[in-house]
Image (cartoon, rainbow, N blue to C red; front, side, top):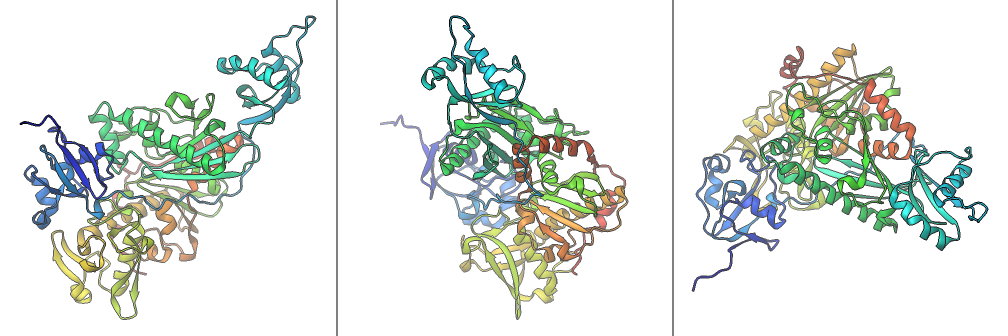
Length: 613
């Protein structure tokens, strides 16, 4: 008898499943099942990272699969975005294709925190009405607020209707005593029984790859908890261009991506409150930073203009709205404040990082680099600031690298030359068998190969020096970093000539961008390089210098400053002065557009060779 049951696709080893639909490929089925599959290109068949092994009848390989997988097709591997199983079946997801939890950087440093928040709390005792003075409850509340703040009676305040409706019950239960929270000294945003727990604030760094939330006590500025997660927009692509493209090709993508982040942010808020023994409804203020694409997509603003010259954002100055308008489950009257952007690809994250390191007060020529998925930089000296953005991030986070990955368990994070030279000794996150290279591991590998002479300054492998560790692969010559029996996926871990070229492109873009800023400012030499973000924090300064990643600078002058964007967000949460200062910073920065710049192309070509010093 025919079965009415819809066939399903089962993903192993997670045992998650989704209905087999004729119109869906395996990547879409995995997303429907909640299976985290690596797909940096957003399922366009360009990156070759969503490798799976179907264990059932599947559609024929596409030309794109044949080009990207080569001989691995014979091993049964397929690209999930190019393969479908209309009749259902099992699909094995190998370790290198699983989107695991990355090591997320949450700490950073600042030049000092100050307390002057937008939210202030007041303990009030309201006068009791009488027949002789039957004053309305709202006006009695306003009079008590004016008295508590040392203001003249009759001072105007704003009271949302929801709080006005709750006022009689609060007065009756507390005998006229209650706690009130004011925003900017005017709007009542919370009313509680007297002696309520302190008002809380949330600072959020929304990155393309990760998101970090910092929970703070607004009464004393104490950091109560930190929670972090991967950005759930990864299924639409690992980089902002892929996500902007998704918004243009699919009318629902913008809302879906915004909703995904809102849901994740609500969970981060709950997690942070659970750590602190608090409730999310006590969060009255949320400050957010992120790059311009994350800003637009989160706020449901069409990001199309960011991908087209002149790359102008829809809104550059700070954005404020009630948090509930976006679905954030904080206090009912909580506000969201997004720090200002500078340009289409210079967002609030680099503005916040500049705030954290005091870029407006730096005297000696200093380059601030935030090398996440996007490469943003600020050159500061003597009160002047120039900013630009370079297309450097994907390779430095494992994108466009054959066996590249984010900084997650199983990623090679550092290499070292053994006393006898090659092979290299690998340091792997959490000490697991290696399955790929993260950005710092890639830089470290190339630095060691340069030092050993197995890699030339031009980026070509030296066959004689590399010896038996070098072979010919599908992507040209490749260095075998680990044999199959020593890896976590049972295949050789290799670094190809194409991978080397990708890093050359990235580091050349960074160096050329910095040199353009130096030329524009009239600076001959850098005194310091400050590396913000996860990649910069784990990067070895000497190795980066050997590759020529930055203009000439002393090794001891290269330092990591952690998640400076997150620190800047906390500073703006705790202090209105710092919030205004962030706006002044964004106005004072001069943006330099590198595309079409007369110097950039020549400097880019000159920056391609490795330095090996």
